[in-house]
Image 1 (cartoon, one colour):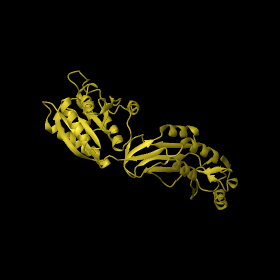
Image 2 (cartoon, rainbow, N blue to C red; image 1 turned 60 degrees about the vertical axis):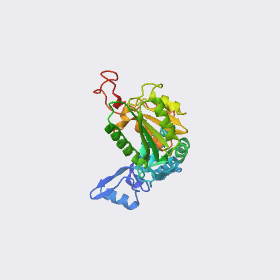
Image 3 (cartoon, helix red, strand yellow; image 1 turned 120 degrees about the vertical axis):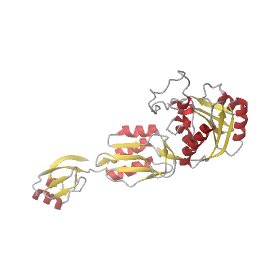
Image 4 (cartoon, rainbow, N blue to C red; image 1 turned 45 degrees about the vertical axis):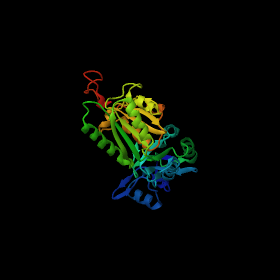
Length: 339
């Protein structure tokens, strides 16, 4: 594409790179300069303008944006019609946004003429929510360059994992001094968290904070209708040998990972029993404020695997709130409600 300042009579057939105002006449940016427009501009005293002229093999910005957006769109992602070199991508279902991050980084590194911006990977989204946007910077780009971007992006780098697990079992453990109202509030907060996924609590029980009793209850829930089990401990998990991880193993399950580089949310545990995921919730999960529990909960509701590597990669961006004012752990008592 040729770009630069030319005499008005030489701009016929090219695009006005910027809006031009002359007397009462306005030529908007991106307008094709016709012979009539050129004549009227000259009559108004305009001698030159900045114009963009396509060359053989150039692809106009809208077509380029649309082709690139359709390449990126995977399962349950719709592409909006392009405008001014931009094409937006939208979720077609509620779920978790999954992104091939390396593909997006690679595409953006091909050339400054092509850009893609997305929501954060694994963000819960609703149907109709914008999840990404493609913007072609110049008015046109060479077809060979566009193809390089398409090749680097691969196919379907953005997709929605629809919510798949709808039934949740909850076990709350009890210790002296833990008020029933605290558990009631915790369940109410959890139900609100489940609403976007159209999931519900199908089984709820309260047992003493003892490994053997908890193991029996977990085994019972794992054999029932619950597709995901959440344990709210009366005391935060402090070690892999603590009550909740011990109970999971006694119930025939396994602990995949304990600990999380997200604050609040450090003391989260992920395990499984009979193939069903189990979350040992951190104390901060009793709060309605966003915390690390939300990130893992929604992935599992969407049946997106959560590995140890996945969890340990969350540290950058994992500081979710200012915590200077809260008591430091083990100074004047544990701050279980925050971790």
